[in-house]
Image (cartoon, rainbow, N blue to C red; front, side, top):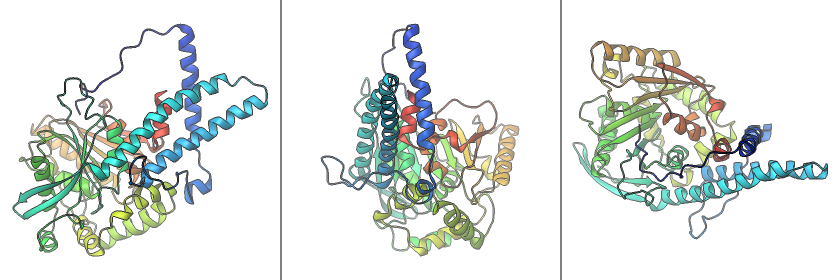
Length: 435
């Protein structure tokens, strides 16, 4: 688990009086009710257009706010609109609206800070990018890598003991594309590194890169690139997070004993556990996930499609080549028993994801854990999470709840089931949940 003790924390508050406790309980109840109302969506919000602010530059810059960040601001606006409407209705009826005004004041304080942080992280995606030059057995690469950190200058003694998070994205997607998840980790006070995938046009790579990957037939090249970025960046300990194709790359990295920098390992919606074939995988991604789930969801269209689209999409050739690799089985129980992070080991899947076979994935990882314990191969214990109602995009759509839970207390049981609705999907839900 990431070390967080060196971040500045609020001073201990004096014990509350009974009257103060009553006020706090009332605020919490109102905040909970408001969170429920914000989460309610009309048909139009769900499928046509949800609350998202208009295009505008980040104050003091020429950087245009990205869609995922505008979504967060839009949800805050929606909460304001609902609460102000309730205050107005109460006053028109001659009712006491003091408690609702108290909630509005509390929400405004927290929302102002959150909006500031959102703009800062959005800016960092463009300005905190370093070209990392690496040498590998497959040739030389220069990989743009972004660093996100809201606490860089807020450490008590100037020494940063946090284990940073290193995030690997989905199928050849640029690092802007899934900004919601790295953003959520950074909002939790973590330092996060996100490399550009080697397929992207901004990456300098050997001319025969595509031929090498196709000939290799697996993701060892991607895994080696990620390892060398970590080492060249001077990271002695990392929490590795991978989603979709990134989860497969993360498993490839972790299944070999030479990756000594690995602390926590969190993988979500991993491929490569079953041999399904390219046509089946294309059907699952294109039809079952894309046409039937992602496209009809205005939230997924914003966070998973519009977000990062201006920075370039992967080519059809890249998608087909990587798809052919991801459609094969790469990990057996024998392979997975070698995965022994020093910290926590978490696997997350969505029960409504057409991409990942829930029963087979659970069975494979649990059997690998059994073999590991039987052969006494390491101290890491598997935490297997099943997200009820979660589709393939749940780590992006519900990034705030996902990131918070991944850093929470370790569960007693190997398998934990959580509801997708319990994973917060917006900054305003996070704000109201903390009141």
